[in-house]
Every structure is written in C-alpha cells, then in structure tokens.
Length: 303
Image (tube, rainbow, N blue to C red):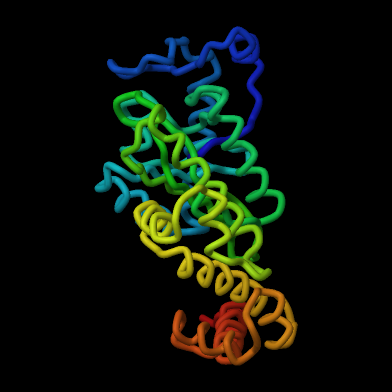
C-alpha cells in the first residue's frame, strides 16, 4: 500500500516497544493505541495544508482524482510530498487507518498510521519513486482495511512531476483483493511472479515459466493474475514493455530499433505494431507529438 519514511523522534521509542501510534483507532481496530497529538501539530498542519495546495496547483488533476476516488470503497488513494507526508487521500484510505476526516491524515507519515512492519515496505517503494522516478506496478502487499483487519491489495505508485519535470510528490492507489491475510499465503508466489514480470520485461519472459514457479498450472495462473489485476499475464508483459518504450521515446534520442530491443520486443516491426495497438500512434508519431507538445508548452505566452 502507501507509506512514507520521515522519522519523528516523538514516536521512536514507541516503535521499539512494538506499539503502533494510531492517533485515533476505529472501533474494530485491534493493532493500534491512542497517542495524543504533539504540541506542534496545529502549526505543522497549517504548513502541510499550504504544501498540499501548492502540489495540487502544480498537478491539478490530483484534486479531481481525490474526489473521484472518494466514491470507491475498495480502492485507497493518497498523495505524499517529498518528506513522505500525506497531503491528499480518499475516504477509504482515511477509514483504513482508523481516522475520521481528511484533515487528520494531513502531515502524517506511514509510520504514524500503519504498523511498523507494513510501513517499512511502503518506505522502500517510496524511496524508489522519489530517488529514481520509478513507477511501482501491480505490487502485491498486505494493508489495513476500513474495519481494521489486514488483507491483500494490489498497489500502483507513480511520481508526480511539475512543469519543469521535477518530482514534487508521489501518488498511489491500492485495490482490495478481498482476501484475508490469513488466507493469502497462496497469493505470495503470484506476487513474486508479478514482480519478476515487471523487473525482467526486457528479456525473454516466458509466462509458462512464471506459472510453474508459482506451483499453478498455466490456466490457473492466468485466472489468478486476471482476477488480481484485470489483465492477463501476457497483457501485463506487453503493458510493461510499452510503458518502458514511452519513457524512452520521451526522454532519449535512441533509435526505434534500439528501443524495441531494450524494451523486450522481438524487433522494430513488432514494437511498432504493438505500440500502435495500445496508443493509436506509431512510435515515431508518438515521439514527434510529445516533443511538439512539450515545445509548445515551453514557449512564453503573450498577453
């Protein structure tokens, strides 16, 4: 799910004793304890509110996303600043961490609202997003639900960039698989297979080999992955390759042939065919359109 790694001295001793500093726990939450707010909380919240407004101005679509995700109860959504503090979240996320209002989550980090063993995993993901601009795709992980129980989710995280291309925040979503943690052991091999698919997409990935490593038949593996992600394993592999190609087309001057090979396509023809099927444009057309739009956006406006 969605965490952060800012270290707050006020909670450090509590972590070492194995307690989890939920500031207000829901009725059914069995892993949190109440802690009073620090004295500087009001001042901190005002600064976070100001930062929230700045981030939402830099990426105006985030405010609309927050409002839209409020309508979904099985998907949690959040935005965090570079200090890993929450600056936006939907209602499902707020309820999952035992809070009541959006104002209560602003300025907090994962270690202040999640059990430490879950928060540590979220922190590792956040570091990849902020330090390397990595996009986290289809990550299987445990997280808390609205009723305080622990379950399995499939998560995505992407960096949020301003007009100059600087990473100013990250945003993420996690979809509830409706699988209790106690019954989720069978999902772990599938999660490892998905990680391998996203990590090794540029090579000769064989879906049958991934299925074999999970202990499932090819058809069982395909059904399990489709239920988790909404896509077949082959579609996920193509999606990962297309996304990598998009980044290369935008950010490099590499030839289309080199991009095809680097992203795992059989050859340039296969690359062009699949890219057009996903985007409606050939790779060359996409690159020209992106650069034309970028140049137009960079020109000073008169008036």
